[in-house]
Image (cartoon, rainbow, N blue to C red; front, side, top):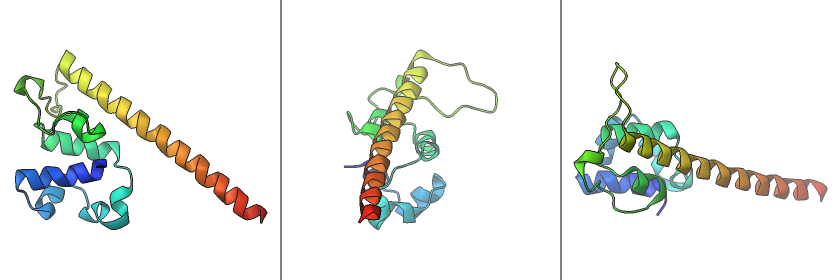
Length: 126
């Protein structure tokens, strides 16, 4: 299951219509249908989803690890308020997981780009 399929599962599990879910997180549902379902999800989209649904495990959303719902409310990190909220160890760990997952996504996309560039180069030689 990819990250966009996990996002769709959040709405389904919570009993929220997809239209309402995507409106609430300010994303386009069209990006989660058909071929678009297999494309990457931006870090801004991840932050929006986790901010609106702090009961969702970032590790599950980003990497498919563990369970969808957080096990302990103490680990919930809400979106920062207008005044800078103090950084907690738990919050820092979640953001480190987010950064690591996004770095993995970037590396995978770089490999895909290199592969596609190689294929284009081969086709141009013919």
